[in-house]
Image (cartoon, rainbow, N blue to C red; front, side):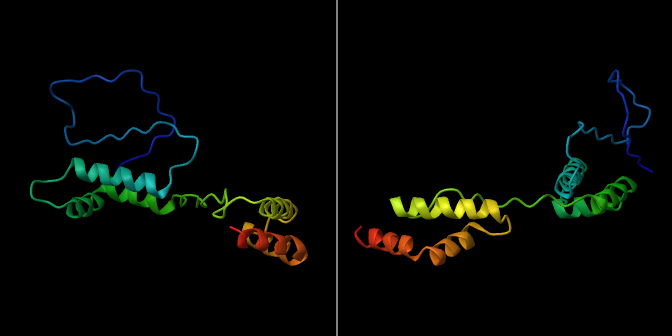
Length: 147
């Protein structure tokens, strides 16, 4: 049964003509700062399946066959226990609207509001600024009407 070694130190790797176990598969991973996520383990499983793919076999069939091996079952159990990747939000920098003086003031006030209340999204903060300072919003609408 495959075993995951955590503190293995390799001093030398030698290539020999007749290996002791030609069917053995060894996967070496560099130490990472972050723990291995589901996506990195899945990629590893796909690479192992592709490396052992038989002629005429589809990638999905090779993956299924690999998952039934003892090594594949062990890797799959680590896959299930691994943390999901951290969701990445899309950057909300910049404005889709042409620059204007009043829009700059609105965005500055919205940014300050977001700093005070981190639960607010940028859009919610802009709506709050427009409601709290209607004169600024009116000036912005006038500027946009002139363009």
